[in-house]
Image (cartoon, rainbow, N blue to C red):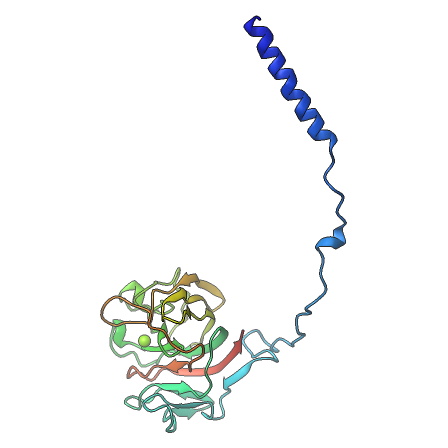
Length: 253
Ligand code: MG
């Protein structure tokens, strides 16, 4: 048989298969087959303004009292930071404070303002911190016009991930952090089965896009996960600077 004839036969055969396949229409599926009605997402009310707590939020600080917090030194005694004009002010030397309630997966909102009296540089200027589960720090720092290592500036996951951009407002103005946190999971042997992830927006601008944490925040050395409870208190840092806070709320997920 001639080679050209073989090619022609092969081509025709292939075409026949293709034509046959096109004859068979896919099984009919109705639009309703991919629509579902339960479970119904709970109806909640958003805050009157975008930064105000929605109806299902747990308010940790609304300007009136520190009832939701204790000293992080012993997890029991009163938190000794000051409330001035409805704002929570870090008191140098009084130590970190932590929430009485413990949280795992959650959405947080926290607002902070750097001291208007500029003191120090780098990590010494307007430093505080929002510690997820008391150990994973989203950095709070006056890095508006002060240089420091990038993975230590405001909005960094301290010593792990620098923020994507620097959308800070000037000292004395309010910065809004919105944080979405997924807690790490551990197996019975204490091995990580699923690391923690964090998304952070500063003033509505994405600065951490679902980053995968390498472990708890370490000032020195490489982070390493250590198995811990499913839920733990959040911690606010006393780094010796009078950073101010307001409007702190959380939505456990
Ligand atoms: Mg800090």
